[in-house]
Image (cartoon, rainbow, N blue to C red):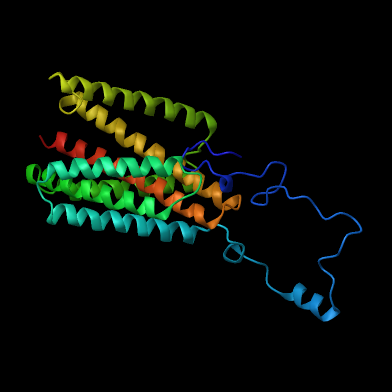
Length: 273
């Protein structure tokens, strides 16, 4: 089962061609060849009584791996945000630079065949700086808005996790196609609005009723991306993805949570105007 998420489309997140999950369909030992299980009766008895190898021994991804790497990545975002908030407050140019660096690092990792922890943590650090500076600016204009956005992001992510675990939401192929089509249209709309902004025009996406609607759609898309992350993590564990792929899981979750936070921040600012 090949993943549809470009971040998770790696060897470890799919069944091997013609083989079992995580084993890649290796050829079997030919009949009459050397027996790898030969030994004394005592050795065979010890092998029989030994506990089965778990994911830790086989180097396969577990939920603990995902939680630990996600905690490290989000922790790095938090540290970067603290630096941006307290040490670089008001430095809008620094925020834009940090955002661009984070974008480059994220794109480089997305096109890598293997996860690179340094790239992922570097992305998290610069993204955190950007979020810290921007959040402080929002807090000056709308006091308490960043805290409200954080709590709202936690509520959305928790709700999506419950909905996914209870199967209220099923990540089917049709669900993914519809969601991705909406996401592409949403991004194109934002790009058009940004280009028009360079010429002094505006589609009104940042204020009023239309701004509220667009922000809500943005939050829903973030929740959609989060459900894809949950599906990819579940598939990765089920199909025996290598342990290193937990870094990609952490990367994907961080991207989705940052998206939701920014859209929540924008929605709250519009509602409080």
